[in-house]
Length: 156
Image (cartoon, rainbow, N blue to C red; front, side):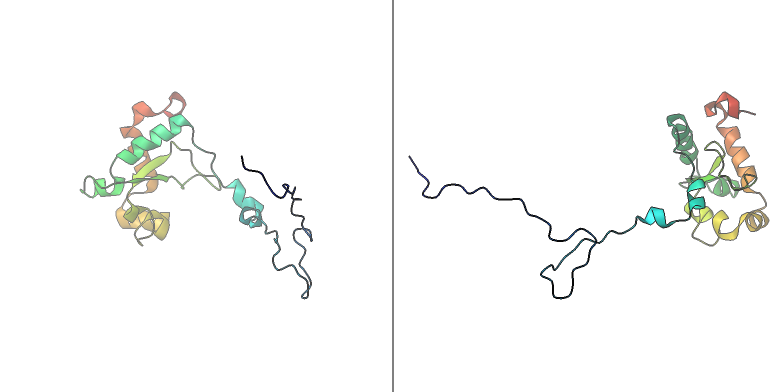
């Protein structure tokens, strides 16, 4: 049987020599301190938080899945079928508020944003002038294609 020559020593927990956020003096033995940093979310103006859309419900997510499964509405009107699409929320006629999750249309990344030819790149009026139809026309066309998936209160 093994026996221990020295008894086990109970160790004391490490103690902080300076509170969090207090910087040590230059000659201090402390080399690291935690500095509290404000959350980046708290740094944004309060009115930015009001622009956020509430998270979509399961029914809204399912509808937006059907929207995304359609090919790009602009490409479809230009005769190009099968382009993968992402969901674009209508901006026209909503004021400062964002549109409902049911006021959406499918747009490919080229016609959405980042290419110079998208609705977010050119703005709504230039987009309508270039293509000959507005985002409202695209949303109404999409709602017409997916009318059986719209809830009863949205079918007006």
